[in-house]
Every structure is written in C-alpha cells, then in structure tokens.
Image (cartoon, rainbow over all chains, first blue to last red; front, side):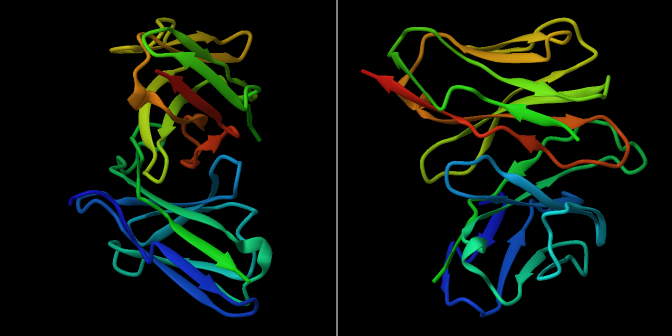
Length: 119
Length: 116
C-alpha cells in the first residue's frame, strides 16, 4: 500500500498518561499535516511540516502537544498528560508541495487516522 | 480567520436521484481554494472536487459538480445519479492562497444517506 499510514489505529489510555502517534506519508511527499477530528465535527488543523521544518502551528496545539518530523519522512505527534478532552481521531495527511510557491495547489492525501480514547 | 458553515447535518436521497449539499464560508481573502471531501464510514477522507476562487467556471468531476458563487461566498456540491457508494460524510473545506498557510479549514460535515 503506497498511501498514508498511521500507527496505532486505536489507542486507549488513562488520563494523565503520555501517548505518541506515528504517521508515514506517501514516500515522495515533502509536506505532512496533522488534524484532529472530534465526534460530529470536521477535522481541525493542528500543524504542518515541509520536510523537517514545522511551518505552521494552530492555536489548538497546546503546550502538551508536540510534533516532530526529524528526517523529513515520518512524523510523530505526542500528547503529554492526556485529558479526556483529547479524545478524538487524529488524522495525518501528506502532499507534494512546491518549495517557494506557497500558494500553489497541492492535494492533501489523508491517512486512516488514530482514534484516541482517554479514560 | 476563515470559517466554513455546512447547515445540513444530514441529507437523504433516493438512488439515481440528484442531491445538493450546501456550504457557505467567510473570508477576507480574495484568492483561495475550496474543496469537497468525502469520508466514508471507517475509511479515510478523499478529495471529491476542488475550485480555485479565481476561476469563474464551476468545477466538474464526472457526476460531481459545484455551484461557486464568490460574491455570496457559497459553494454547493451537486451529486447526480446518486449511487449507494456515495453514502458518506461530506466536508466542505477552505484553503487560503499563499501566505505560508497550508492547513485546511473544514465545515462540520453533512451526512449523506442514499436510499435504495
């Protein structure tokens, strides 16, 4: 399968624990995005990377959230001291962005998501 | 900041009929992209159709077409000859053009039911 993959697909944790999710983008894609989708809502943008650089962060990304993409390939999203309000589907997407042409359209391809339940 | 509003939480249509999903948005930008994404149950989100704001011609992809009214900030999706496989959540999304911002802003979605 050459699409975006996410691991794990489901995660159940207790409040206060730390969790980490992984996203593997489509291999030639240089941009990677994280979104959060709560029940009954549309996805909300969290952050995105171009190669290893984190270029944009939403105000939704609190201090407890950190995302990395150290080698410009896969990315991890860590949530520290989880709260019940963190329960959501965390979606990853990737695209082939044109460096230096920020406005140019680049289709975002989404992964299946990681469903987090905080008890 | 931009907002996207989908006022129809759920729509139902008979198989082979036509259905229109509504979307309005608010932005101060003049150049942007609009999208419709489909999210089938337990499956990943896929792009259905996109529209560039600078284009006056409405986008069309096979049975899917849009009615883009820039002045009214309206962007509806028409699905012709509805099929059972069209059943899904449909999300309208906005992306500004340039400025380094590449994240999508989504509406809350419309649940489309196809009745056989």
